[in-house]
Image (cartoon, rainbow, N blue to C red; front, side, top):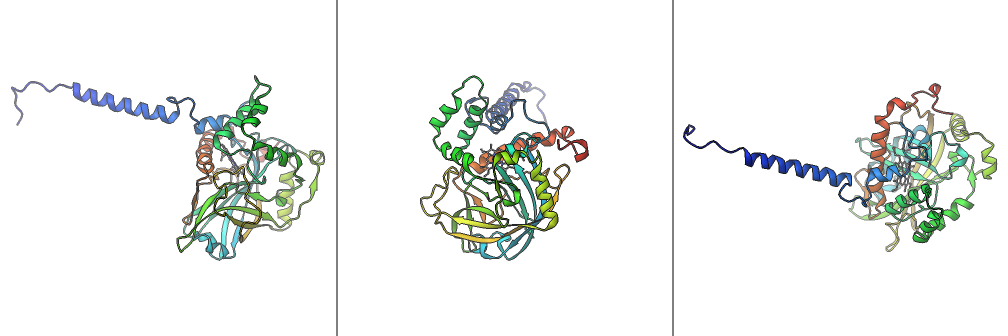
Amino acid sequence: MTDKNAPPRSAVPSLILIAAIVVALVAVFAYTAGWLSPQRLTPAKIVGSLAPPGGAVPGFRRNHAKGICFTGDFESNGSGAMLSKAKMFAPGTYPVTGRFNLATPDPKASDATARVRGLSLRIVMPDGSEWRSAMIDAPFFPVATPQAFYELQRALASKDDPESMQKFSAAHPEIAAFGAWAGSAPWTVSYAEERYNSLNSFIFTNAEGQDQTVRWSFIPAAGPDNVSADELKKRGANFLDADITQRVRSGPQRWAMVVTVANPGDPTADPSKAWPEDRRTVEVGTLVVKAIEPEPDGPCRDLNFDPTVLPSGMHVSDDPFPAARSAAYSVSFNRRTAEDKYYPHTPAQGARP
Ligand code: HEM
C-alpha cells in the first residue's frame, strides 16, 4: 500500500543519474572517435591519409583499389601440422577465394605505375573456420610501425613542405632499404611470376601446444620474365589482368606456401626488417589458382581480407601491424560497401577504363 501522506518522491536523483549516463556515453564515443586526443592515430585517420589528391574513389577499397578476383584450392601436404594445428594444414584440399591487386588507391591506375603487387587469400576449412591473408611482393615493409606508415602518407601528400620526404627519411631511416628495393628490383610481366610475402609475423601453435613465431611466403612456379619499367608502360593500362586471365585459361597457376620460423631474438614486431636467409623453412602446400573472375560482382569484391581472421592454431604476435590493419580495413570496408551506388557493377558499366 502507498502512503498517501508521504511527500512526493523527487525526480531529481533519477534525472542526475540519466544525465551522468549520457555524459559517460558521450565521453566513450568522443574517446573512440579520437576527439579527446587529437594526436592519437585512429583507423579513420590512417584510412583518410591514403586518399589520393582528388579524394578517395567512392565504392572502392581505400588502398589496393585495383584488382581481379580468382578461385582455386589450397593443397596441403601435411607438413604444416608440425607448426600449427590449423585444419588447413591437415593433408587435403581446401577452397580458396582470392584477389590479385595493386598497391594504389586508384582503381584505374595503369598497371605499370604500381610498384607493389599484392595477393589476398581466404581459405575455408571443413569446420567453417577461415584463414585470411593479404600479402605483397616487396621483401620488407617500408616502415617499422603503423604510426610511421601514417606519417609516410602525410609526407608523400604534403604540398606545403618541399622537404617533407627528406625529413621523413631522416626520422625513419628504415625506408632507405625499401627505396633501394623499389628502384632496383626487376619488374615481372605477370601476377603469376611474383613471390608474395606476409611480412607481418604471426604465432603458430601445434597440437602439442608449442608456439613458433612465423612469417610466410607464396613462391611462384612460373619463372620470372623480367622487363624494364619502360617496356611495361607499352603494354597497356590493364596488361596484368589480361595476362593472368590468359594464363589461367590455359592452365592452373601455382605457388608453394613456405613458412619461415623465427629464431629467438629475430625482429618479430618490425616488418621493415627481413629475417636472415638461413632461417628454418617448411613448405606446407600449394596454392592452385583455377579460375579468374572479374572483380565487379566477383567473389572477392565484398571480402575484407583482414589479416587477423585466423583459425585456431594461429594468432597475432607482438607485431603491431595486423591489429592496425584490421581496424583500417574495417573502416575501408564499411565505407566502400556503404557507397555501393557508385560502384560499377559490371564491366560493361565501366569498371575498367
Ligand atoms: C598500417 C599499415 C596498413 C594500412 C593502414 C593498410 C591499409 C589498407 C586498406 C585500407 C586496404 C583496403 C581494405 C579493404 O577495403 O578491404 C588495404 C588493402 C590491402 N593491403 Fe594494406 N595496409 C597496411 C599494411 C599492409 C601490409 C603490411 C601489407 C602486406 C604485407 C598490406 C597488403 C594489403 C593488400 C594485399 C591489400 C588488398 C586486400 C584486398 O584484396 O582486399 N597492407 N590496406
